[in-house]
Length: 267
Image (cartoon, rainbow, N blue to C red; front, side):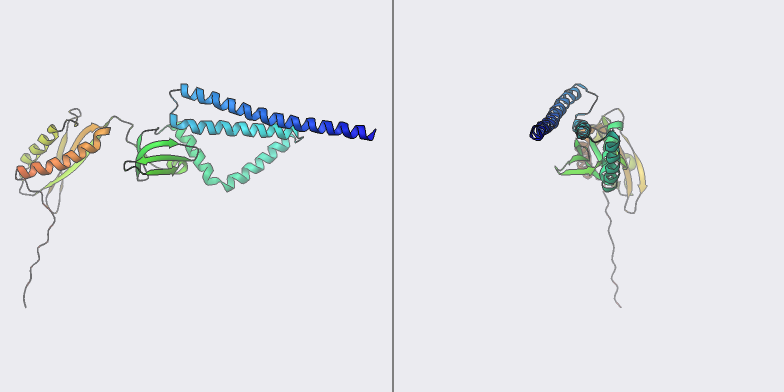
Protein backbone atom coordinates (compact mmCIF):
# COMPACT_ATOMS: atom_id res chain seq x y z
CA UNK A 1 0.00 0.00 0.00
CA UNK A 2 2.86 2.31 0.89
CA UNK A 3 4.52 1.49 -2.41
CA UNK A 4 1.36 2.38 -4.34
CA UNK A 5 1.14 5.70 -2.47
CA UNK A 6 4.80 6.40 -3.21
CA UNK A 7 4.26 5.72 -6.91
CA UNK A 8 1.16 7.93 -6.87
CA UNK A 9 3.07 10.74 -5.16
CA UNK A 10 5.90 10.30 -7.64
CA UNK A 11 3.44 10.52 -10.53
CA UNK A 12 1.85 13.64 -9.10
CA UNK A 13 5.32 15.13 -8.68
CA UNK A 14 6.17 14.54 -12.33
CA UNK A 15 2.83 16.04 -13.37
CA UNK A 16 3.57 19.06 -11.21
CA UNK A 17 7.01 19.49 -12.78
CA UNK A 18 5.59 19.06 -16.26
CA UNK A 19 2.95 21.70 -15.52
CA UNK A 20 5.65 24.17 -14.47
CA UNK A 21 7.75 23.37 -17.53
CA UNK A 22 4.67 23.73 -19.71
CA UNK A 23 3.86 27.06 -18.07
CA UNK A 24 7.38 28.33 -18.75
CA UNK A 25 7.38 27.11 -22.35
CA UNK A 26 3.95 28.59 -23.05
CA UNK A 27 4.91 31.80 -21.28
CA UNK A 28 8.08 32.22 -23.35
CA UNK A 29 6.11 31.49 -26.52
CA UNK A 30 3.48 34.05 -25.49
CA UNK A 31 6.21 36.65 -24.82
CA UNK A 32 7.64 36.03 -28.28
CA UNK A 33 4.21 36.41 -29.89
CA UNK A 34 3.49 39.59 -27.91
CA UNK A 35 6.87 41.01 -28.97
CA UNK A 36 6.14 40.30 -32.62
CA UNK A 37 2.68 41.90 -32.37
CA UNK A 38 4.06 45.00 -30.62
CA UNK A 39 6.82 45.28 -33.22
CA UNK A 40 4.27 45.21 -36.05
CA UNK A 41 2.08 47.78 -34.29
CA UNK A 42 5.06 50.10 -33.81
CA UNK A 43 5.89 49.91 -37.51
CA UNK A 44 2.34 51.04 -38.32
CA UNK A 45 2.46 53.94 -35.84
CA UNK A 46 4.17 56.70 -37.80
CA UNK A 47 4.10 59.08 -34.82
CA UNK A 48 6.44 56.79 -32.87
CA UNK A 49 10.06 57.38 -33.86
CA UNK A 50 11.81 54.26 -35.15
CA UNK A 51 14.75 54.85 -32.80
CA UNK A 52 12.44 54.32 -29.80
CA UNK A 53 11.12 50.94 -30.97
CA UNK A 54 13.87 49.00 -29.17
CA UNK A 55 13.19 50.94 -25.98
CA UNK A 56 9.48 50.08 -26.01
CA UNK A 57 10.11 46.43 -26.96
CA UNK A 58 12.56 45.99 -24.08
CA UNK A 59 10.03 47.49 -21.67
CA UNK A 60 7.25 45.17 -22.89
CA UNK A 61 9.53 42.13 -22.60
CA UNK A 62 10.54 43.11 -19.07
CA UNK A 63 6.91 43.40 -17.92
CA UNK A 64 6.03 40.05 -19.52
CA UNK A 65 8.95 38.30 -17.84
CA UNK A 66 7.94 39.68 -14.44
CA UNK A 67 4.38 38.41 -14.94
CA UNK A 68 5.65 34.97 -16.01
CA UNK A 69 7.93 34.68 -12.98
CA UNK A 70 5.04 35.64 -10.71
CA UNK A 71 2.81 32.94 -12.24
CA UNK A 72 5.50 30.28 -11.82
CA UNK A 73 6.05 31.27 -8.20
CA UNK A 74 2.32 31.03 -7.62
CA UNK A 75 2.32 27.47 -8.98
CA UNK A 76 5.13 26.67 -6.57
CA UNK A 77 2.87 27.73 -3.71
CA UNK A 78 4.28 31.17 -3.07
CA UNK A 79 1.47 33.56 -2.09
CA UNK A 80 0.77 36.84 -3.87
CA UNK A 81 1.57 38.85 -0.74
CA UNK A 82 4.92 37.12 -0.43
CA UNK A 83 5.71 37.76 -4.10
CA UNK A 84 4.81 41.43 -3.72
CA UNK A 85 6.93 41.72 -0.57
CA UNK A 86 9.90 40.03 -2.24
CA UNK A 87 9.56 42.18 -5.34
CA UNK A 88 9.30 45.29 -3.17
CA UNK A 89 12.41 44.42 -1.21
CA UNK A 90 14.27 43.42 -4.35
CA UNK A 91 13.13 46.59 -6.06
CA UNK A 92 14.42 48.74 -3.19
CA UNK A 93 17.78 46.95 -3.20
CA UNK A 94 18.07 47.20 -6.98
CA UNK A 95 17.07 50.88 -6.87
CA UNK A 96 19.90 51.63 -4.43
CA UNK A 97 22.46 49.57 -6.33
CA UNK A 98 21.45 50.78 -9.77
CA UNK A 99 20.32 54.34 -9.08
CA UNK A 100 22.39 55.69 -11.97
CA UNK A 101 20.97 53.10 -14.37
CA UNK A 102 17.45 53.88 -13.18
CA UNK A 103 18.15 57.56 -13.81
CA UNK A 104 19.12 56.61 -17.37
CA UNK A 105 15.87 54.66 -17.79
CA UNK A 106 13.91 57.64 -16.47
CA UNK A 107 15.82 59.84 -18.89
CA UNK A 108 14.90 57.51 -21.74
CA UNK A 109 11.24 57.71 -20.75
CA UNK A 110 11.45 61.50 -20.73
CA UNK A 111 12.99 61.46 -24.21
CA UNK A 112 10.04 59.37 -25.42
CA UNK A 113 7.51 61.62 -23.68
CA UNK A 114 8.94 65.01 -24.71
CA UNK A 115 10.57 63.88 -27.99
CA UNK A 116 13.26 66.60 -28.11
CA UNK A 117 14.95 64.77 -30.98
CA UNK A 118 14.57 61.67 -33.15
CA UNK A 119 16.67 59.36 -35.23
CA UNK A 120 18.70 61.20 -37.85
CA UNK A 121 18.46 64.60 -36.13
CA UNK A 122 21.60 66.70 -35.80
CA UNK A 123 21.94 67.60 -32.12
CA UNK A 124 24.43 69.13 -29.69
CA UNK A 125 24.52 67.70 -26.15
CA UNK A 126 27.13 68.79 -23.60
CA UNK A 127 29.47 69.87 -26.37
CA UNK A 128 28.98 66.62 -28.31
CA UNK A 129 27.59 67.27 -31.78
CA UNK A 130 26.34 64.58 -34.15
CA UNK A 131 23.39 62.79 -35.70
CA UNK A 132 21.22 60.53 -33.56
CA UNK A 133 21.74 56.89 -34.53
CA UNK A 134 19.87 55.08 -31.77
CA UNK A 135 17.88 55.72 -28.59
CA UNK A 136 18.11 52.71 -26.30
CA UNK A 137 16.95 51.86 -22.78
CA UNK A 138 20.02 53.39 -21.13
CA UNK A 139 21.98 55.20 -23.82
CA UNK A 140 21.58 57.46 -26.83
CA UNK A 141 24.11 56.95 -29.62
CA UNK A 142 25.37 59.80 -31.80
CA UNK A 143 27.57 59.74 -34.88
CA UNK A 144 29.71 62.85 -35.13
CA UNK A 145 30.36 64.63 -38.40
CA UNK A 146 33.87 63.15 -38.45
CA UNK A 147 32.39 59.62 -38.19
CA UNK A 148 33.04 59.00 -34.50
CA UNK A 149 30.48 57.17 -32.35
CA UNK A 150 29.47 58.76 -29.04
CA UNK A 151 27.19 57.13 -26.45
CA UNK A 152 25.58 59.43 -23.90
CA UNK A 153 23.62 58.13 -20.85
CA UNK A 154 19.98 59.16 -21.03
CA UNK A 155 20.17 60.48 -17.46
CA UNK A 156 22.74 63.07 -18.54
CA UNK A 157 20.63 64.07 -21.55
CA UNK A 158 17.61 64.54 -19.29
CA UNK A 159 19.49 67.16 -17.22
CA UNK A 160 21.34 68.85 -20.10
CA UNK A 161 20.54 71.55 -22.60
CA UNK A 162 19.83 69.84 -25.93
CA UNK A 163 20.22 71.85 -29.13
CA UNK A 164 18.38 70.19 -32.01
CA UNK A 165 19.67 71.70 -35.24
CA UNK A 166 17.26 69.62 -37.33
CA UNK A 167 14.20 70.98 -35.55
CA UNK A 168 14.02 73.78 -38.13
CA UNK A 169 14.62 73.67 -41.86
CA UNK A 170 16.47 76.99 -41.95
CA UNK A 171 19.58 77.91 -39.99
CA UNK A 172 21.51 81.17 -39.65
CA UNK A 173 25.21 81.36 -40.55
CA UNK A 174 27.15 83.89 -38.45
CA UNK A 175 30.47 85.14 -39.83
CA UNK A 176 32.73 87.95 -38.62
CA UNK A 177 35.28 89.79 -40.75
CA UNK A 178 37.82 92.33 -39.54
CA UNK A 179 38.90 95.28 -41.69
CA UNK A 180 41.40 98.03 -40.92
CA UNK A 181 40.30 101.36 -39.48
CA UNK A 182 41.23 103.05 -42.78
CA UNK A 183 38.71 100.96 -44.74
CA UNK A 184 35.64 102.53 -46.30
CA UNK A 185 32.88 100.67 -44.44
CA UNK A 186 30.30 101.16 -47.18
CA UNK A 187 32.68 99.64 -49.72
CA UNK A 188 33.44 96.69 -47.43
CA UNK A 189 29.74 96.06 -46.88
CA UNK A 190 29.09 96.23 -50.63
CA UNK A 191 31.77 93.57 -51.19
CA UNK A 192 30.25 91.36 -48.49
CA UNK A 193 26.77 91.78 -49.99
CA UNK A 194 28.09 90.81 -53.43
CA UNK A 195 29.74 87.67 -52.02
CA UNK A 196 26.49 86.67 -50.31
CA UNK A 197 24.58 87.31 -53.53
CA UNK A 198 26.96 85.01 -55.42
CA UNK A 199 26.25 82.05 -53.13
CA UNK A 200 23.15 80.16 -54.40
CA UNK A 201 22.66 78.33 -51.10
CA UNK A 202 22.09 81.58 -49.19
CA UNK A 203 18.37 82.31 -48.92
CA UNK A 204 16.93 85.62 -50.02
CA UNK A 205 14.18 85.40 -47.41
CA UNK A 206 15.10 86.02 -44.62
CA UNK A 207 17.42 88.61 -46.10
CA UNK A 208 21.12 88.84 -45.30
CA UNK A 209 21.91 91.33 -42.54
CA UNK A 210 25.28 92.86 -41.62
CA UNK A 211 26.75 95.58 -39.47
CA UNK A 212 29.66 96.66 -37.27
CA UNK A 213 29.69 94.73 -34.00
CA UNK A 214 33.06 95.61 -32.52
CA UNK A 215 35.89 98.14 -32.60
CA UNK A 216 38.74 95.72 -32.08
CA UNK A 217 42.38 96.24 -31.21
CA UNK A 218 43.47 95.64 -34.80
CA UNK A 219 40.43 96.77 -36.78
CA UNK A 220 36.69 97.06 -37.17
CA UNK A 221 34.67 93.83 -36.98
CA UNK A 222 31.75 93.44 -39.37
CA UNK A 223 29.26 90.64 -38.71
CA UNK A 224 27.35 88.96 -41.53
CA UNK A 225 24.13 87.08 -40.76
CA UNK A 226 23.00 84.86 -43.63
CA UNK A 227 20.34 82.16 -43.75
CA UNK A 228 20.44 78.78 -45.47
CA UNK A 229 18.96 75.30 -45.26
CA UNK A 230 20.31 73.20 -42.39
CA UNK A 231 22.12 70.75 -44.68
CA UNK A 232 23.91 73.63 -46.45
CA UNK A 233 25.29 75.24 -43.29
CA UNK A 234 28.93 74.18 -43.56
CA UNK A 235 29.10 74.75 -47.31
CA UNK A 236 27.85 78.32 -46.87
CA UNK A 237 30.17 78.93 -43.91
CA UNK A 238 33.26 77.77 -45.78
CA UNK A 239 32.21 79.61 -48.94
CA UNK A 240 31.86 82.93 -47.14
CA UNK A 241 35.13 82.62 -45.22
CA UNK A 242 37.11 81.77 -48.36
CA UNK A 243 35.40 84.00 -50.93
CA UNK A 244 35.38 87.10 -48.71
CA UNK A 245 39.15 86.79 -48.25
CA UNK A 246 39.68 86.70 -52.03
CA UNK A 247 37.18 89.53 -52.64
CA UNK A 248 38.83 91.80 -50.06
CA UNK A 249 42.24 91.21 -51.67
CA UNK A 250 40.85 92.06 -55.13
CA UNK A 251 39.29 95.29 -53.84
CA UNK A 252 42.36 96.31 -51.85
CA UNK A 253 40.61 96.00 -48.51
CA UNK A 254 43.10 95.19 -45.77
CA UNK A 255 42.43 92.38 -43.32
CA UNK A 256 44.52 93.44 -40.30
CA UNK A 257 46.28 91.10 -37.95
CA UNK A 258 47.80 91.65 -34.52
CA UNK A 259 51.42 92.80 -34.67
CA UNK A 260 53.97 94.05 -32.21
CA UNK A 261 56.48 96.83 -32.82
CA UNK A 262 59.76 96.36 -30.94
CA UNK A 263 62.24 99.21 -30.60
CA UNK A 264 65.81 98.53 -29.52
CA UNK A 265 67.81 101.26 -27.85
CA UNK A 266 71.51 101.31 -27.06
CA UNK A 267 72.91 102.53 -23.84
